[in-house]
Length: 424
Ligand SMILES: *Cc1c(COP(=O)(O)O)cnc(C)c1O
Image (cartoon, rainbow, N blue to C red; front, side, top):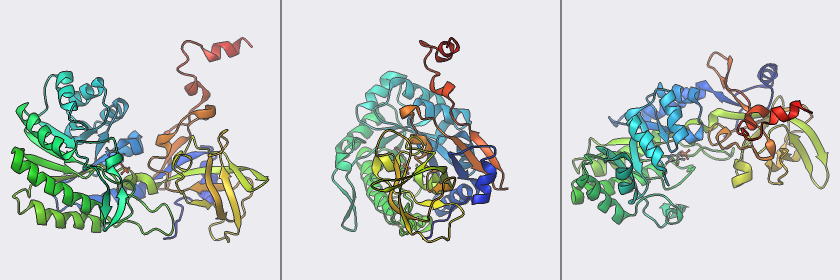
């Protein structure tokens, strides 16, 4: 599929008059249409709910747009809970899916009335000790171990992942929780990440539905929801076929009707905690070509760096690049596109075929709407960029200003940098 930027050169030339590069920009129209399509794909399920994985794009403006489509939040830390709380998203609109959880985070989640999704059997006692009771509604995260395969091809390796209860622990856990007063149960599992196949959710659903029937039969637990979590991916590469959310929804429905309905569990709600699928395609990192360098290779240095988008440096992830204004020019140059970090892995692209890039050209790095800005860090004293929202009417709203040196130095109460500089 051809990858087209949702901004043009003219638009960016206008935007930079007010908000200089680099910046992340999000496409409100795309976000809304996708959220609507997801909701429709699962509308067959009465209790269906998406809990947006806040870690993917922790911005209140984004959370509020998604909330309009019935999305709650999936939080896993204190500050993510604070964000949700500040957006007036509370109670059972929050799924608290954390691991290695500090006591004060369980306390805050309980205070907000969030649904707590336990990552480990030992967390049952830890939670009870921490908040003094076991909530009526409780969820447990399942990890079957081994490999997760679809049609004989290995998708991921849950046996090597730190998350979740084993199958035996799920049975024991539900029993213990029930004794301690839990009344409504949920099952959660996340077995493969960034899947670009319509089969992931239906395959996972089948496993969880079968487990749910067994759990109900053996423990008598009243299972209210099954949380398929995240993992639906997006086509980062132009040659990948995008997922079809309608087909995915229908695949889950088929499994539901084959397994849960005959078991008398047709009122179970389906929950999801998608992050990447909700936001990734609707974000661009826009950056400007600052330098060209001809040594052993051809380099273009841009004004963004891995501190603004870590995925290429961290995972070798592919992010498509469009040179604005040269969308139709032949890709007859081979470049490494680099940032300024003193780290040789600070490259947005390696040996990428692109049109000839001139200094001052604007580059769009695609699919940065999820796990993009959010993974930003301050290595080398590099600062976070701004975040902008391209509204449906074509206007642009600042939804987070760029970091300034004062923000970077803000935690030096013990060594007031600005006071020192004044004396020079
Ligand atoms: C990261 C995460 C998600 C979202 O994953 P995506 O790959 O962005 O869909 C959902 N649930 C949990 C518990 C996660 O850790």
